[in-house]
Image (cartoon, rainbow over all chains, first blue to last red):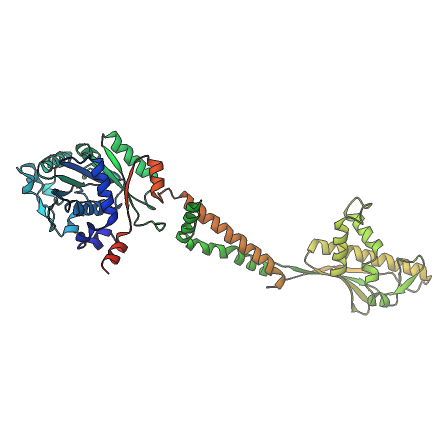
Length: 219
Length: 244
């Protein structure tokens, strides 16, 4: 059973988990306490816990004094962030080309100081042109940084590449830092190493790894 | 070190369904040993009357009747001269027969498996009952020839002409027997079971070793050479405890 199904409705508890607090503290230190930061969370393959991590970090960060947080779902191929907050998907991708402020397209999360940008649900007559998604995504990230002190971006996995997804290697360059989530006792280390190499080659600032011990009986 | 032991233990748990494979070798052994012939009965008839004299090999002039020989078959079979002759036929060097374990093995094979029986009043039977077919055939042939030679010598020593010499009657009859199960197989069965369990455990260890996923943050840090920002546990369990 996927973690997000069990965790929907528990988002308020996310910010109380000690391990998430520690990860946030490490990321905040790595980002050098900037006024406005953008953090990308990605992984080598699907199902490693990116969305869980994004939701948890966003929930905790929103409690910190002076923080205004936006959790963005840029995994339009397999969106899940909206389920954590009980939100609906954005319906019109073409609207994202013409909005003035990010506030026009974000939604309240139900938690104070935390908004969410749900993924776009597109159908065949609204589908974006090939390569347009990354341009829109980068534009959204730039707009979000103007309004929020911390933008946390949930992305697709790096593998397998899919022409319909927003490539995390491309948008990572726009962020201040990238954290890679890895599922222990599940993902082959060679896959993770390859993903890290791709991010590094793309010019991303890799802050570090987050280990998801969900499937590890040794922990 | 402890990490690897712990990893192997969890590997055994992960692949425990493979432990069923360990049953196959012992079962295979039981089936094969039940259906394979493990006892051979080889019998050679010799046509001869019961009062025919048989030369005693321990005496240059002595002889006894077949009837007397039937009461003491060890005179024929466990005669050291006979066994030395047989040993010489099988193995070229007979000078060191006393210290050669093969001599003792041959002696025990004769002692434990050879008998002399009386199926009819006009014939005797040299019989082998044991696990080795080829050896049994060889022993039956050897002692059949031996008996016939001894009878011929016995007739000569008795100086009587009224007895006719013994003759081989037909070919040796071979009968295969199967023993479904016997206690002597328990030790082999136990050894095979232990070896197959160890083999499957080694296989489980090999399968776990081939799993290239990370088992700890330390492994991640060493292999990827990046900082480990943190680790999240099984959140289902965390929520379950928080909601209590």
